[in-house]
Image (cartoon, rainbow, N blue to C red; front, side, top):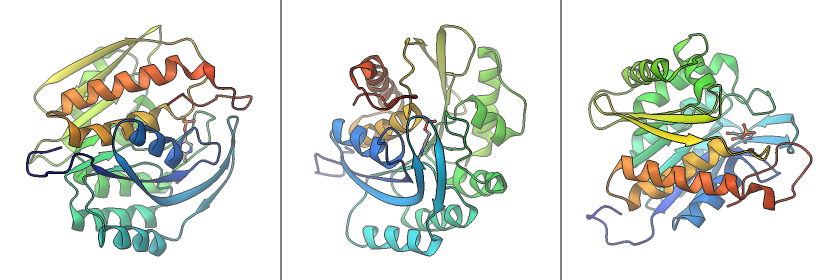
Length: 271
Ligand code: PLP
């Protein structure tokens, strides 16, 4: 926690989609936040019917009801860090941007969720512009994977670490220039067995290397990492330390994923 607050346990909030299988979305976020010593609140921004194999249906949540959930919560609870995950639709993005622009939480992690591992679209295509123009400027840190970075920058796929560094710079340029803002560009989609994530603040370029863990149970890895970061940012002194610790948490969660027997497809990681 920052020194200006005497509280030991930060209040964190995820504004995201509901995955009933518990591997991704709000349920994954709440598990990660709780495991990492934060108190978790959740605003439901989209509903999905899904299991470990597919997203079979999506039902939007009315934007005015998303607004009501956020306003009611902030009227009562001091929120120390917010994570944004699946919002699904332009109207919801606009409401979330408006309310968070008003409440200005100390830490805002934006996971620009667009496509599920199953290939199903989680964000309307026409909503990408609203996400880029209204939410990116508010974020403390954004956590795109390589396909999401490609969509945000309207560019072809990224295949090398060198290209990743350039992409991280271009993404950082889309964010607000004042204040300390970060890009965590996740390289899990790079070819090969070594993985790398790149953390960039417009000045420092930090590479976080890793090895691919042999498991097909990787459902919700992106949600888990961004939620872990949201829990840790208020508890650690720097974004770099919080990111390293969040990544460590995710690696352990993937490494023990095969202990779970949940579904026939890409199962969840183990919190
Ligand atoms: N469902 C919801 C509600 C999500 O927020 C996400 C990811 O962010 C997914 C599904 C997709 O998770 P994955 O791509 O890990 O399967």
